[in-house]
Length: 114
Image 1 (cartoon, rainbow, N blue to C red):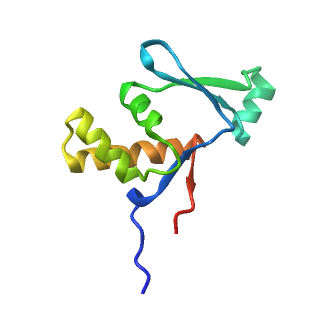
Image 2 (cartoon, one colour):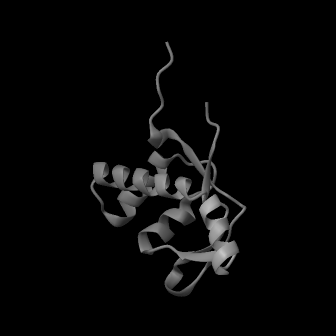
């Protein structure tokens, strides 16, 4: 019988399609390309830029720097919990939600860790 993996057991990896830098106040700034249909229509009709900058907040920047393609979301949440003194379940939930948003926007991929 195969057990279903938890979302926390996934291994995130930064999507190298997007360039990023460490900006002011040690915050991560990601240059993302507009790829979706709606974004392409906006580019065509309203002369919107082909790329946009996304600046992560302090928490997001800390998490981003821990993504190495080897650690699971659970591992990263545990590190955040120890460093920031967050309660374990809150740290896991917050990390899972953050990674879902990163994935939804195409900023990360998940390593196949079967």
